[in-house]
Image (cartoon, rainbow, N blue to C red; front, side, top):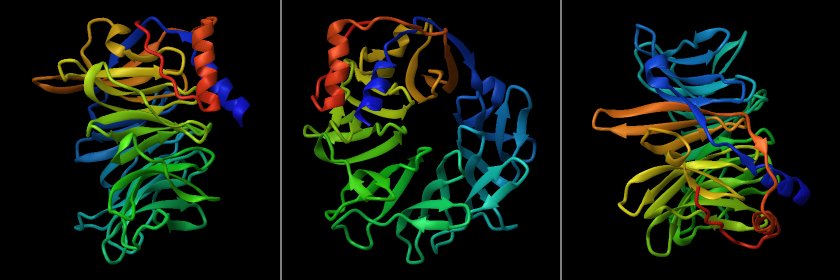
Length: 357
């Protein structure tokens, strides 16, 4: 496991100087989106009769996934889509769905309440999200084909009425999200079938949330520091939680991680303005605006294993989503200090690299 983690960290040492930028809003017209390594997108689009979940791919274009008022919120590496939809005519309540080619949309049910929402799906069709219990408490769920929806429970010591939310699932069935502890504070968690919910801690404050994870065991998210500012973090079982820092401001948040350990999100500059970032163990925190010409990128929302990024620009007219596709990476020898720093992270020595672009 350690060898695999070190290898994944060292894969991040690549030269990517330029990105091809494509505006997504004008092309797709969707309010939210996720994408996979095959270049497939899932999201929400008005097909003329109100919002509908879609899957888009280069070869087939848009596929209307059906449902009433549906929204695609997650897509797996092999093109399965999860989201939420109305399933009963005249009833605006939405429930989680799994869409599969040749099968269509499956209603995943609830944990006893009226609604549910899917937030993640993996390549074997396992879906995670949140749903209220019969008495109203929101709980993280795992839905599995042939098993159905399972409540992922509460953190050790927490009240039976504690709430939780699942945000993502990996192909090896690690689930991340947030859950209340015994004091009612929202804490980032990692769930595995062997250990249940694990509290990942914070950066010195009381609360946090885990947003994404990869199969190697890297978890990313946002947690409160001792000075009450929120910081982007990377967590592994060997290092614990590492603060990724900012560009001189107070707040940052990590939103997505790929198989190579590249992380994207947002971080404030000295003026308190959000800047989209790309982080890896070799180069540290980098402002994506320094890698992409003539853009004002305020947040990077997702990154796939090919290094393509969905980023957001913000103006007085609202926001625009952009797809940033990197030039083909050329492996470069890592400087000795950077190489050692990557290895230090893998063996548990907490160290951050701050390098200019």
